[in-house]
Image: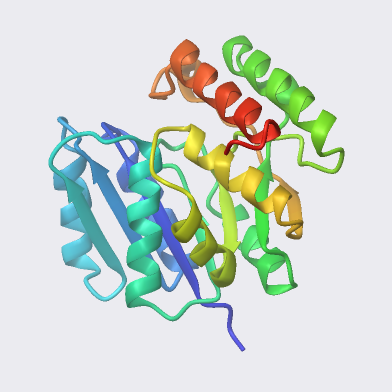
Length: 232
């Protein structure tokens, strides 16, 4: 049986990248759900244009105002569960820093029995501001979960339909910490997690990223400590 793949792509002010991203992902999946997270550039127009061209394979969900990546992802996952019968749900960033062909490798992990697959990047190839935060988070999480994946922050992920339903039921929206909560939930429930090596791509030293270096890093660490204390 063919693995039916739904891709959820959150987009916020990525008009320079989102068209190429969507067009590269389209042939690899059954359907794309793109969320325009309150963009103030041409992102929404670009997504709408592609959706009109591929109305049977793409849905755009516009947010009137920016809500945060976690809210966008959650909206996309909820829509997928409500409207599609699928085997694998893949999340894929809209800023051009993921390589589309590797999406298939993550989906194959789910097809083979994993509940969650993470596209693992190489820390040494990350810009310093990204490398430090990822290293500290990985170090701390391994104290509690020695078998945790080393790349805890990658936005390129795949989920089984069962675990996608669990995410919707148990995890609220938010910003980048929402993705971290998904990983913590999988670890707590002893779900099968696999890491798939992917290229480490940072365009223009990651200047297109909307990750708030200090605020979002603190939120991720707070999420981890609350989890370890049994309060999250």
